[in-house]
Image 1 (spheres, rainbow, N blue to C red):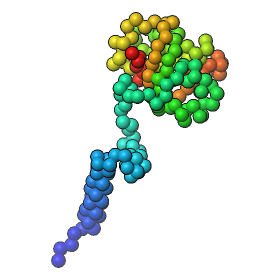
Image 2 (tube, helix red, strand yellow):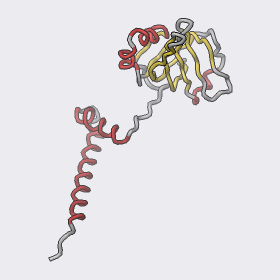
Image 3 (cartoon, rainbow, N blue to C red):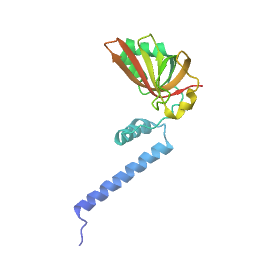
Image 4 (spheres, rainbow, N blue to C red):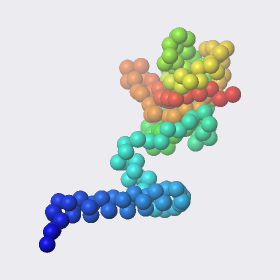
Length: 171
């Protein structure tokens, strides 16, 4: 009587379990995307295992928060831990006055929104939307939407800049 080698039997069982698990995950993600199983079990496991977050188009996304540059910076200056928990990795729409712009030829364009003369909101602009930057200059009031990525303190100057990336000008 021919026996299946032990390693092959283990490999078959593991393959079968992986196929069943993948099929169940596929079912929940495609057919029941809002279910508890999908939201609390499958998405976190898949996110952890892949190490990647879904790309989010900031221009087409609705902001999670809409504030003035003063309100956003004040939240970080008052309680940085709470502000990080609330705003970090979220789409934030900020209105304020431009204090400076990096060189126009620079592909890594950064707008600084003035807060109090010392601190700023640093907005790293998304290169695919640089065409919207025509006519924008320091002193202009603008509305910018981007992903908040925390803050940066400068103890020497006593400033705390809030950092935003993948920013776009809102028309």
